[in-house]
Structures are given as structure tokens and as C-alpha cells.
Image (cartoon, rainbow, N blue to C red):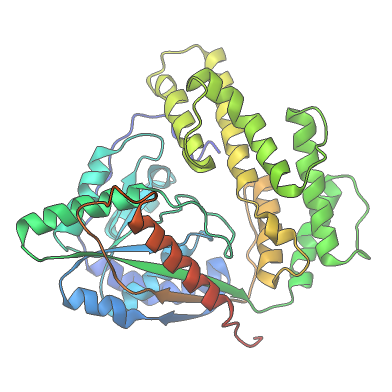
Length: 402
């Protein structure tokens, strides 16, 4: 968690405009994906749609779903195919994981965004890049890595704000010039034996729980038992007892037990938006004095504990209840066990072979003006509908076993 939350004054990290480094790195991307993420094969579909927008000189925003850490590299495969470098927004903490990584990210066209507060410099950079049609801009509207390929999380409204402002600027410069959004659906398929793959992870977790290895238990039941045990331990810690609710309200009650006391202290009880937005609002209130150092060490420790509670709330939120249904896919089983391991150890071992499919959606033209009569933002509703449709279609394209 402390690698994600940086208690230093924020400084915007701009992108480099190099074309050399994206072209060079593109040559080793398939090797890197095999070695570091288990992605041993891939497909890129619909690249001609993006090519048409590039040829038309539109300002372009690409909005992929974000279920795995390797998603940016999968998007890089699309960049390779079109010989077109992209810009990409990335959380500021990624620039604090070593000088080499920070140097490399900038050369690949990546620039920082501060997720714990308003980042005007990043927003200005993004709007100008899109309004000037310099390069397509990649942003992940879910805002977090979900590890859930079959559930699209809440999409951040900042996507619409950014693209509409870019459309206004582009229209002011060149009459009739357009800004478009291309939804990007990324779907991963596990092509190995899922039971043999996840069993070593489950055995380690069962050992942590002081259980005997549950070898004779069917895989789904085994995963469900582990999930129930891990959730029960946190309920006892924070609520004082195991809850007797269905899974979805049970998860919701756990999240509220973590966030509601913090919202009463820091936000006067307000809890606007989805869970990710609530967490962002809390961190924006808790962090400033931690950054300036205007608090005692005891208070600093207390606030770190509160931030840890927001982190746990996000972890709980990202477990899809439907993954524990009667007929989960191999990917849903794998993703659930990966999330168990990540939440317990902050690391996930590589599982292979994985087949990745990226599909470019049809261009969505961005109007500079929002229809205020609509109950929900029409642009975000269209983006969500297109992404969900594409992900559903890709799910049915299961490749043959490796």
C-alpha cells in the first residue's frame, strides 16, 4: 500500500515526445508479455477503426477496461500494429518505483496523474494533446486494476470532462474538427489446466489459515471456502462478528464499516459516488498534512492506518459476487485466486498460457456540450454500453486449448 500512496509533494511528470523508444520497445513487447505476464499469444481486432480516425486527423482518446497489470502493454501491441505511438496517463506512484522505470515511462509517452487530488497540470496536458491531435491518448476510465475481466467497474466521469474540453478547444481552433473516443475491450483467456494451476496457491493460503489441505474438495467449493474464511476474519476484526447476509450485501456492509467512520471524521458524513470515488475523496482529505509534515508521528501512524482501511475497502469492493456462482469460467476461477494471493502477499505469481484479445470499438463522437436534460451523462452511458457489449462478445470467442 505504501508503494501506491506517496507522501511527498506532487510534481507533474510530463511525457517525452520520442518516437524512437516506442518503436524499439515494440519489438520486444511479445517477448516481455510472455516472460513477465504469461501472455503467450494475442490478437488485435478492429485496428482499422482506429486507423480511420487517425487518417481523419481526429483528436483521439482510447479507453480500455483495466483488469490486469499488463493491460498497458497489450495496448502497446495496437500501437505496434499501426506504427503509431500513444500518450498514456498513469498514476504518479509508478514514477516512484525506481529511476530507470520513471525514465522509461516518460520515453514511452506516459505522463503522471495524481489520483489523490486535483491534478490541473496533467489534465491540461491531456486536453492539449487530444485537442491538438498529437497522438491518441490512452486512459483507463475504471481508475484501478480490477482483476475481473467479466465485470466492468464504475467509469470515472473525468473521461467525459477531459474529452469535452478537448472537443471545445479543437472546435475553436479548426471548425468541424472532431474528438472521438474509441472503446478498447481487452479479454484474457486461460488456456491451461486451471485446477492444477491454482492448487499450489490455494494450498499456501490454507496453510496460512492453519487448515489441512482440502485436496478432496471440488475446486469452486474450495475457492468459496477460502474466500469466506478471509472475509470472516476481516468481519471479526472490524465488525466483531461474522455477518449472516448474502454475499453482495455482506461485502457492501463490510465496505461501509470501513469507510463510513472515516467519512464522518473527514467529510462530515458525505459519501458521494461509487466506492473508488469515496476512497479518493477520503485520501484527498487525509493526506495533505502527511505530505507537509504538519502532524505528530503518532497522528501520522493513525492516518496510515486509516489509509490502510481505505485500501482494504477497495480490495473488498473488487471481488465480483457473481464469480462465486454455480458455473464460473476458468478465467473467473483464476482471477479470484490471483486476487486472494495479491491481497495476502502484494504479489501474484505468473500463470500461463494466457491468450489476450484486444478489440477496438467504433468511434464515439464527442460533443463539446453535454445534454443536461439526460439523467445520466449520455457519453459515459454510451461508452459503458459499448465496452460491456464488446467484452460480452469477446467472452464467446473462446480459443481452442493450447
